[in-house]
Image 1 (cartoon, rainbow, N blue to C red):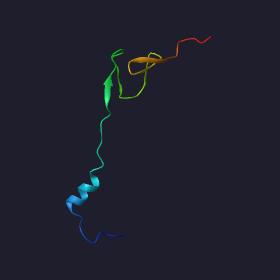
Image 2: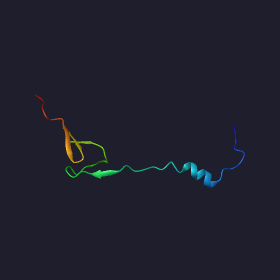
Image 3: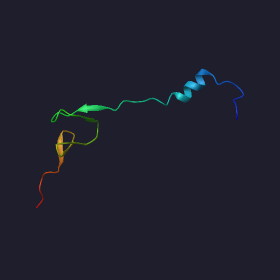
Image 4: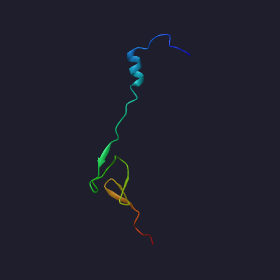
Length: 64
């Protein structure tokens, strides 16, 4: 099994690990439904698809 010849410094280790940040998802609250959803994403609520405070699609609406 291979072993490192020299020890890596703390700064080199930290540089490598600097990109491994866990980010919390950005949530917002809708004005119409008061429901939390992902920012810039459409979401379903009571068989209606909402995006930017407007109903985009309604599943219950019958088509002729």
